[in-house]
Image (cartoon, helix red, strand yellow):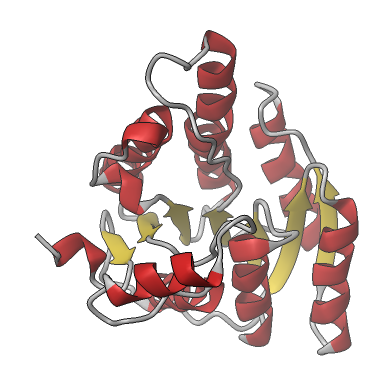
Length: 242
């Protein structure tokens, strides 16, 4: 896919990985709908950076845990951008929920944002991509590993991987659907320098990743016209340690 002039919606684009993806797309000449929920000020900064570089950015707010919100957001983005060619499902939550402490409320909220929202956003986006398009879902290394303190999160992200495969087959040949599964690309604010060094030392590539590493994989999947149904793991090789 030639990216220049295309229209894209990036969910959760106000900060962190979503921001990096939105900025990377805009640098390729993509018109970007910057979605946010509560991060209004950071989202405005993302849009301002795109515009300052000569790009086109539109701000759209939506609480994607609400059942009707994902489809409505997609429709609003298509209206604002006069079409929709690309959807990047980046908005997600990762909460520490050890077994024995998981509540039904936490489970429902996590799955509403991490899995239900990208599915219904993708379903709505496919209706706008009548001339072809591409969807990239942001999964997680937790989809392939077992993290005892993050079991519901891992299950939700494993669902994203399977959703990617199923939608790739169902929406072909008009729409390609792929995913990126990042490892550690942003450290929690509570981590110390020693924690970061320990993590880097146990990663085959000997460094912690960055949001730009994820954005690069997203760009590849958008431009790779013969790739669909695939999940790229971007983790510095941590998944091959054992």
